[in-house]
Length: 433
Image (cartoon, rainbow, N blue to C red):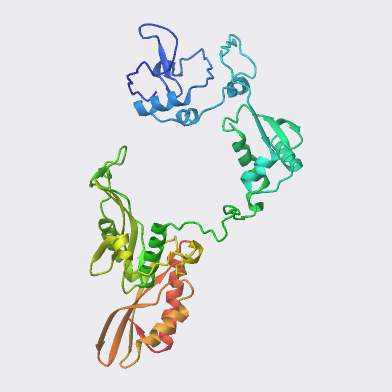
């Protein structure tokens, strides 16, 4: 219908009327209609077709011919053929109601029914209350489960704590008893399931038995803790690169290889974060990454850390050789206390202000004034970016950053704050440049 000519393959399914020379292809099944079946001002006879198609076939054909329609999206997700009868009745009724509420002379309705040979088979799922509760970690009674099945309007039978349901034709996603765990859990409410860690039973007769520690994990924890204490912040960079020793299949055209080092990604991350240092109120930028690198010799976990001077990358074992690592401690004792604070997901607004102050007046007084009137939206300490003296006066230039944790700020909001700051500066007999 879009005027595009498509070359079909034997695997492509079409709707056809059987006319020569090519069988009268009218549409690519489940994808798009063709010109020969187009309705225009000369159309007199309409054939309503309601069908169901194999999802894999529709998906493959659509991608090969590069045509993506609403029909493709629906059919590739798999639909029940039981929808066809319902859809036929609805569309026919709509045409009768809208186009021919009173049948004009010469208008005839003729019904043609093509009964599909392989109807959807009835499916059943059996499960019991104990199985559901074990998987959910809940204590739902059999009577409560029965009420949930009734709320779904499922046809079911019950014998004690066991159930068997007849799967509705449209619920192609329900396959086994594990799917019923989700069905019952969703209605019951996951918020009602108490998060209790399962009890681990130690081997019988082994008093004092201790699970074996994962030494690699402990080294990673120790390395991370050491770098965090030294003031570094952790980053995670992309594993795929545009060059390397180990290639991957079906990857992005510019990311066909696995990384051979952490330094390249860390350098890129450093440069990106460095641009925002003044706005974030940072005097220094120190970042690190712990991750796997890949070479022809195999995989290896490395540690890389960077500051404004250089990047250092070594293996995890080498980094940890001078770190005290007590392998007798349980993993639970390795919880790290950090000062991490979630950053805002909304954009910031920066404002600069320059103020003439009498020579000898300390800039800390101006900083306090700005902070006292900057409200909670001022996310960083005012940063001095300019200073010079002239005629017994000193000019101080400060940059302020405003940001909200729950919304995007407007210029109007920030302008009100700046007006308040300027007003307080005027009250001090200082002058805003």
